[in-house]
Image 1 (cartoon, rainbow, N blue to C red):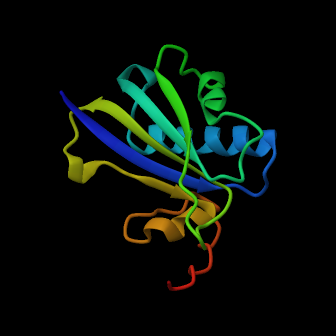
Image 2: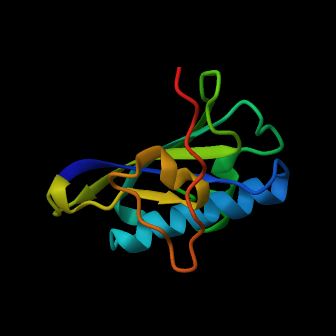
Image 3: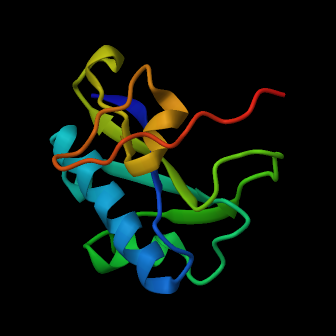
Length: 135
């Protein structure tokens, strides 16, 4: 069994506590289901949020959906001018027999624009966030 990292991100509709909890739970659930994982396979998860999301820790959402024994950490993204707002990102370290090429990284809602090369819209997904201005 190998240790692999899975990335994901979701752009939230708002800045509040409920938006953070609901969006993070949606993202975690999508990562788990698309990669056919159980919480026992998760070694740790690092969450980051853009500077505008301060109402709650994303890790609380993971705890609420069953990640009680998994080490979770939250941090704030660096402030980059023109960066997409209201984004929760994660990097999950997991134990899996899947090769790296078969892992599914998950980018939901407007966050699909962050990685158009690997993003997959969720069922009923929304169109990508408009292109960011060139620097």
